[in-house]
Length: 399
Image (tube, rainbow, N blue to C red; front, side, top):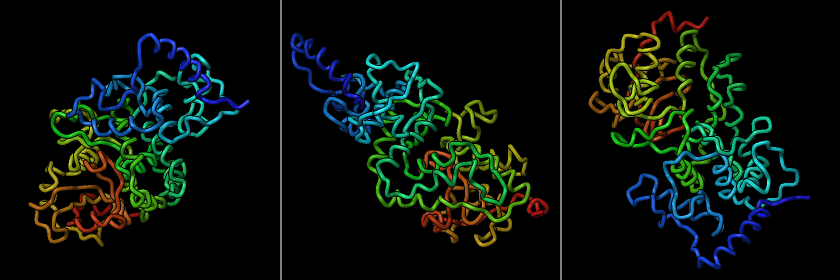
């Protein structure tokens, strides 16, 4: 017999109604009345909006009555319920519930949310365990929200979620980049601007690397951005479905492979190290600013003589300046207010060129390390200034 998530809810509602008769009426919580979300809290607008989504007695992320607990780490069962309600599937029937040793039916109030989330492919158990009280790493949260958006927008071209899977993606024939499994989900998430870039200086302690657990406020922000995403931005995902590079040399493949390891790491002002314990100076959290990422990959890992630390200083040392048509994988590329007419003082951003217009960089607009294209993005195309070559001629030879 098909069962519904609200079969348990009806029993709970009956019990609560008895208590309500004695205690008086209780109004459903709304974000504006959460006692622990001040007006100046960074995710206040997101919390206000998402907790107004869903049925009045079953709103998204409304788990604690008059409290929201924004800085508490979200649990897997809370995320399951949030995704199910956000996608409008809270009343789905589950014909064949999955056995879960750690989620007891008619005892765990999130049981049916979890079953629906599993059936919809939004989340998954490991063997017979769901770990309902476990936390959610940032990259898995982004994956879950992207899955929810794919469910809500079946008309969108989501091909990149398949073609960018590291087990499938071959930017050169027969070359596996060994990029992290999170690659396609991070690319989709960051293109859709789902993550918040916490501002320097006080906010950066809130940043999260891909493997770190995220808070309820972070989930609220992702859903706020995702559920309101513009159709033109969704259409832009198509640009990532077939990323290839010209044939690369052994060293160019090394540089590319190493850079891709950090996809999804947060943007941190002054950041030049993947963890906060940089030997070169204090940073609030592990992560990179634009020139810090270039420095980490090309200077720290591969030892190229880059003695400058800011984008403009790196750009000043570009002799000769590499034009766009002459760019090769491993070149540092710079962006300025006046594009190719920019002066050194105009340079504000740097990245590492990969090929066929693609580059990897760390930027606040995508909240960290991300792929981008000089071909697909008019912004980056118009602001490209010049490049700088640090790889040696012999290292560019394709054998």
